[in-house]
Image (cartoon, rainbow, N blue to C red; front, top):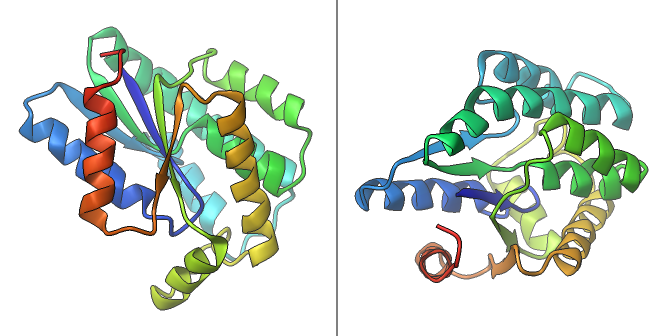
Length: 203
């Protein structure tokens, strides 16, 4: 089973993804946890380029670098472990490129979808948790935590477009996308995630 966690920056999705991975470990499930961009030697080097705040790059370059890291992660870790019967938990996957580079940067959506399908061998998650918070809340969290990588320093208009992109993706695939209210306390959010997982038909 392939499970992904999505959301705008500072939504809490990484925290929830790690807590869910801990839950799988305690439940004696066979699983691996990966993050994007990164997870492989090549992917981690690409991550440094993508997130360095002093690098200026166009949306097309950003998208292709994310896709390259994702292609390597998919073939090196995700597909082999899915084939071995492991649960794969990913902190971001291809939906992020649609939301960030497609809707956020304004790249052609169909082009982003087509290149993404090629990069991931048409792999689609079985279950996606979209941790949703208002943009103003995300901005406040980033300021408090002094986050400042190249993407996190974007303005509120950018993150509004990204959030609307995620909501559009949810409309297109509501059976896979589960919206989780990320403004609640961490434990309540995690309890809902676990409940959805336990009642999901694909295992």
